[in-house]
Image (cartoon, rainbow, N blue to C red; front, side):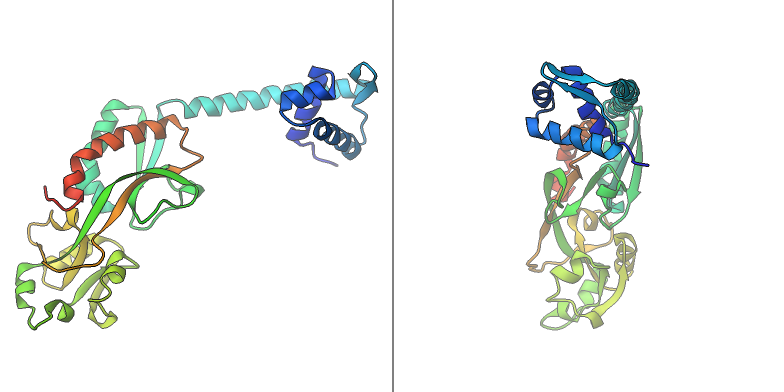
Length: 294
């Protein structure tokens, strides 16, 4: 049994409505030969004569008329489904899934998300807090706010600002570092596959790493307890009551903070509303994110 493809039925419906191949081709924005090829293939595939090919145009056979009635019912169902889906996407309600890092959520985004809720109370926010980049194309999230060197393929987004980084440690630990190049002798606390192990690699060798984690939070606690130095976004390091920034030259001193979504989601009303709101709201945090302090 051959499966009927909705795309093929659209050609049959259009020819039946327009009465000729040329008119159908104009309606479908294709050429005359494409319409003829699709109709011939449909009739051959299903062993069904759909149209009488007359000098005056195309007229449905008895079998074609029955097919048309069924096809119209299918078209009505498909269009209703499209209206429902489109209607949902155009509503400022429902779930909006946001992925970001735990530090950005705690130190930067909390007040902004509360303000967004006041504006759009029917949008339910789902937060996915992780240091790894989730795959939005697989619908792990609708929107991401996270640092990145560039926008991933098939994503659209806005570069919000530059995030500054620095080396931090507890004052007593920093004072205890001896020698001409004290940072070279320091113990280090780094993220798994994170910026620290890559961007300050001239200072860090594997034997100097005393702790790795998939979040900055446990590393900060370790640094505050004199376990070693940590390479941090400045807005995180400056928020600690204990940690002190080390005056040291680092080749990599920042990365871009992006607001992004998959290009298939950019027309969603919820996504558009969130973009417009967050682009403006986060301007008040530019100084902190760029390392200028609170």
